[in-house]
Structures are given as structure tokens and as C-alpha cells.
Length: 260
Ligand code: NAP
Picture 1 (cartoon, rainbow, N blue to C red):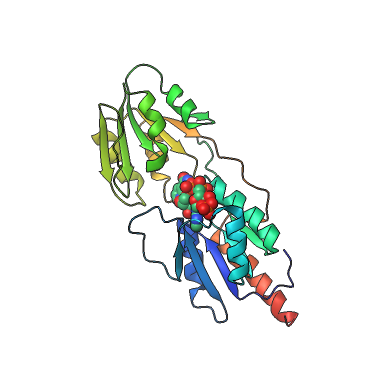
Picture 2: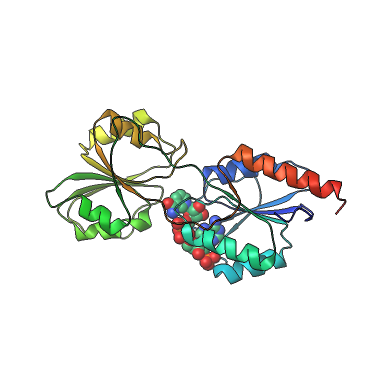
């Protein structure tokens, strides 16, 4: 990063548990003004430890304008690893506004003995991978990502989301559960058993908060159709909140030492 920057104003692109944890760790630090940015998808987001701005910026150019207008010193992209558009925008905007960028990206889960995973590139491939015979499928996906499964109406779908799926899927059999995670392995196992699920479609999100279903699938010998991670821009990145804090501490120490 350009370590000559004065570190005072930090923008965290969030929507993840890590972004919240990082904001929380920085909230009380003297001399820092931290803002958390959310896409505005959830009707009632969790309370956050720092001021929040919500909604899109209007592409990379909009984000770049925001960085300049708000005199942001450091941009942290702590969005979900499948939020590829905002991460691409962050990389472009940081470059054009000349603002240092750090990406905080969880490492993906690795397949463990007993896991039955089929990795696919796209949601359409996930639909195909379910096959023709009717199955009972847990769609462990965002509510906005499940429309492609309408192309396979022979399956029974279980969908769990924070906000209701509106409109519902155009399929004859769908079960909706509204709940906010994280969910333990026991809770996810109980859900899978209660609904007699025989296949799961999931993203390789990494981290602990959504691993319960993967561990539960292993225990129940259920197949998981796993969406591969999207390509993300190559920027300086760390995989944990601790490492992001260490990076920021180093940047702050450096900028203080230079007296800028
Ligand atoms: P995306 O496809 O990468 O982004 C689509 C557009 O939404 C972006 O171009 C941007 O609009 C806006 N946007 C996304 N994240 C934003 C943020 N943190 N602050 C302000 N604007 C944002 O993103 P997505 O996959 O829909 O994810 C949306 C949010 O949900 C993100 O905050 C992400 O961390 C969180 N999330 C996503 C997933 C997932 O699986 N994708 C899972 C859990 C949480 P403009 O171009 O207008 O700026």
C-alpha cells in the first residue's frame, strides 16, 4: 500500500460477520473515523458498532467519487467472497481515487474425508447437477440467487432466509424458513432431518458461521453441490480480522512515524 497516507478515515465494505467484527475492533480507537457500508439488501440489518451508510454507490466510478468526497484514507473490502461485483468495483475505485485497499477474504473450506461434493461453476450447472429424478433439496443460497431452480420444478426446495422470498419460487413444492444465522451443526442437522433433505446446494463461503450445514451434510452422508468461488481482483488481501487489524496497525504506526 501507499504507506505515506494519513490513516484516519476508514471505509469498510461489509455485509459479513468479519466486517462487523473489524468495525467493532476499530470503533473505540482514537483518531479513527470508521464507516461501514452495506448494500441495503436486508430489511432490518443487525445493529452495527460504527456509523453505517447503505445502498450501492453507482458502480466503480460512484465508489471512487465517494472515496474522494469523504476523504477516505483506507478502503477495506470485507464483503462476502461471492460478492464479486462490489470487489471488482472496490479494486477499480481504489486505483482511480489512489486510496490504499485491503481485501479481507475468508479462506474457502476444504473437502474433508466423508464429504460428498460436486463442484460446479454456475447456478445453472447446479440445477443440472440435481438431475431429473425428484429430490428434496436444501438451497443454502441467498434469496436472490434461487430463481434458476424454477427450471427444475420436479424437486422440493427448502429455502432459509432472513427476509421472506417474495415472490415465492414458481415451483409446486417449496418450504420457506425465515431465520438469521449463525446456525450450529446440530441445528442444521435437525433442519435437514426434519425436512428429509437428500441434497444441498451451497457456496464455499469459508468461515465458521455457515459451516454447520457442511458438517451436518457429512454426518448424514448427504451430497453437496458446491458453487465454485467467483474470480476476484488480485489485490493485497488477508484472511482474518486479526490480520486485517495487524495490517492497519502497521499502516497507522507508519503514517504516525512519518508525521503525515
Ligand atoms: P455484488 O453482486 O458484488 O454487488 C452488486 C452491487 O451491490 C454492487 O455493484 C454495489 O452496487 C452493491 N453493493 C454490494 N455490496 C455493497 C456494500 N457492501 N456496500 C454498498 N454497496 C454494495 O454483491 P452481492 O453478492 O449482491 O452482495 C451484497 C451484499 O451482501 C454485500 O455486502 C455482501 O458482503 C453481502 N453478502 C453477500 C453474500 C453472497 O453470497 N453474495 C453472502 C452474504 C453476504 P453499486 O455498483 O451501485 O455500488
